[in-house]
Length: 101
Image (cartoon, rainbow, N blue to C red; front, side, top):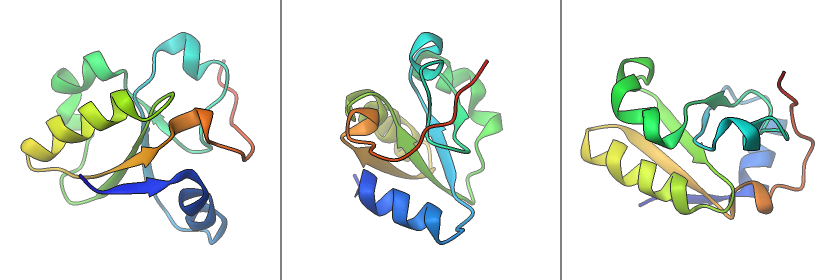
């Protein structure tokens, strides 16, 4: 499984790259803040929401620490998606976060 550090992801975002970031945490976790621009799909919902994920795009998956996003990466990769796990997850994210309502 491909992985990227939070600092590498932050650098790519700072360059203005148009990235697909999927946050697989639970609603209450995301309410605390997420990577700016991240799309929220709970891990448990991924199998039923595959139609929302483009197979032609590389997706960066993030969770609290990297474990759940790693499982999501394995599942998506097995189903033909291009995914990269964000190592360390939000615990390692040192940049600003986007608050959700």
